[in-house]
Image 1: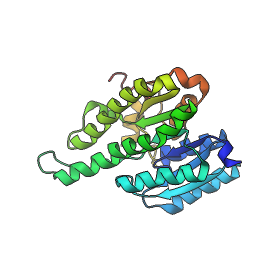
Image 2 (image 1 turned 90 degrees about the horizontal axis):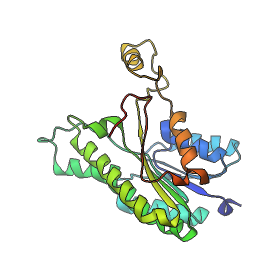
Image 3 (image 1 turned 90 degrees about the vertical axis):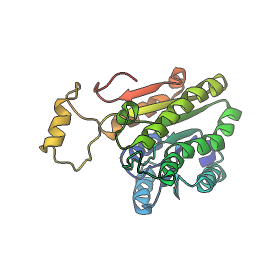
Image 4 (image 1 turned 180 degrees about the vertical axis):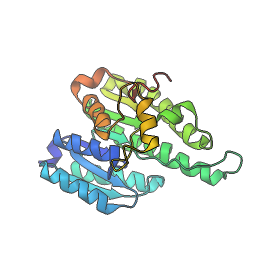
Length: 248
């Protein structure tokens, strides 16, 4: 039965990295809670792939920048599957905005979407994890956010806040079997991108691995983190970028 299996809630799981994570975890036997902000069709397509894998899923379309909707999404997942064992806070926005010209409302929108969504979901899902003595919370940052964005100060601040939350929760929840980590992906070109394009070739030339990343590279790390063998990885920033940067 669905409630006998572990459940993963993944924000931004209609495409790209979130989709890859959803499919990997579904193949490992997880119930999947799919989320997107608007594109239900994309999530339904992923749900169809999960069904072919023999898995079960549910779709929650909501603006994760809205606290009430995020809390309702978590409760719907718990009502449906009885639990959320793995929380992957993948979705984010990265709008351009000159620091002196962007409004406070613009700034707050980025913080609500990128940081407070993870805050609210962790508060909603962690109690069940702690009660069972097992859980995984996985956040996402990015190379540019780590190094600082010109024209995207709010994005960098929101991602640094997630890094701070990761470190604190890893110490608070770790003794009770719940790990918290943050993944920093490298450059992952769109699957339809022309590999002969100058931008692609420049990125390829600058990557020590001799290739660019794929969503499956990130999903493979999540696969490790959610195993019992991954339980000693806690409070870490895991940089998956082929070696383009190796410090934070």
